[in-house]
Length: 264
Image 1 (cartoon, rainbow, N blue to C red):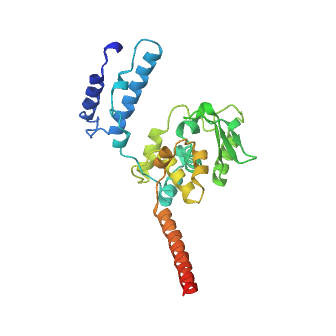
Image 2: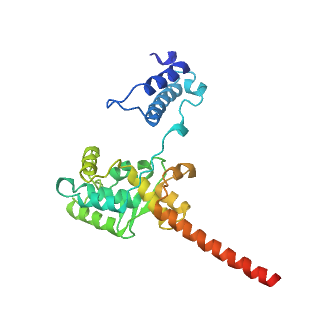
Image 3: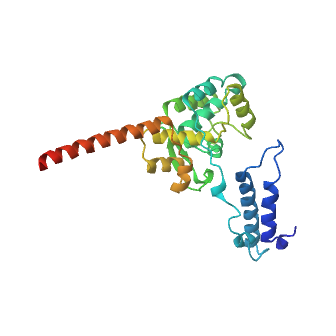
C-alpha cells in the first residue's frame, strides 16, 4: 500500500487478520507478537510523519488497537535445581554459554547489553560493570555489581582473550538462540528463554532483601509498573513475607495486651 492510503480500518483489519492466522507450527498466534508487529508499523508511520511524507499517523485515531493489558505476562523464574542442571551442561561446544548465563542471572542485564559489553566496561578493581547509555534500551547509563562467581568467569575469559579493552567480552557476533534452546532441551528445562534470566535475577535481588528502588537502578527500569512485570514472587519470597507478617502480628498482639493490662 502507498503510505498515504493507510487508514485506521487497515490497521484494525491487519490486527484481526494476524489474530486469525496461526503460526507456522499451527498454534494460536499470541497477542504479544501482534502488538510487537503493530508497534513496528506505528514506528514506521511515525518516521513518515517526521519526514513529512504523511500528515498524521493513523494510529493516532485508533484506540486500544495495541492492548498491553491483553498480553499474557511471562512469570518464568529459574529454580536452583534447573540452574544447576543448565550450568553443569555448559561443557564442550556449549562451554561459551556458562559465562553468559552467570552474567545474565547475576546482573539482570539485557541480552543486547551483555553481547555489547567490552572489556573497558569491566572494572575488576571495584567489582562493577559499567553499561554505557549507547548500549541500554532506555539510553541511560548505569552500573551493576559483579558477584564472586561472575568475576571468576570473567577472569577466565580475560586470561584467554587478546586483552584488548575495545574487544567485546563474550565475542558474540550473532545470537546464541539455537545453542541455548538445545541446552534447555537436553537438561529438561522447559519453557525457559534467555530473557527469563532477567526475570529470575530481578526476583532474586528482591528476595535477597534489596530495596525496590536500588534494584530498579541496577536493572535499568525507570517505571515501577514496568519493573513489577519482571518481579515474580517465589515460594521462598512468599514464605518470608508470611514470617514477617507473623512477627508483626505477634508484636502487635503483645503490645495490645500490655496496653489492656495498664488500662485495667
